[in-house]
Image 1 (cartoon, rainbow, N blue to C red):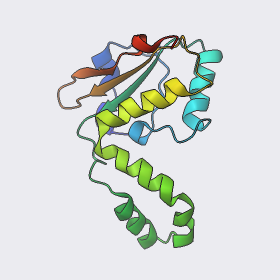
Image 2 (tube, helix red, strand yellow):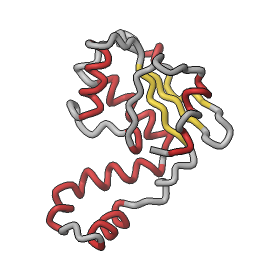
Image 3 (cartoon, rainbow, N blue to C red):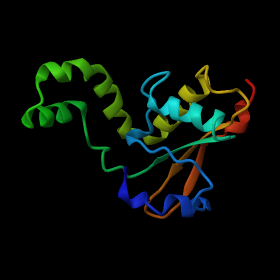
Length: 149
């Protein structure tokens, strides 16, 4: 979601247009075992021939100061019914608070993808962290270490 990453991240990685299937979402989250991210990855692997997955988080996230409680207050102020918020309150807390710890979040998302029974064990799932201030990319999880495990 961070607009600083548009046309910067791919270039920093040396990826040209059309060389990668890119799925973007706030917080690099995998909400459920067959939610939209996993469904997209399943299609990418089985229908489009994707052979590796790279989860990329970034430092200096503008949402790092957000809290679930603050978000709920803003939602109520905009007219969202408290009853509607109750439906997603647990997930909201779990999701918003991951922005505070981008490195741990990347590792957790890599693990969730790697452990998903729909993702083949021969597909490496890597985790990287990107610094949008200088373009530096650090390896958090080397997906080759867990192939076939």
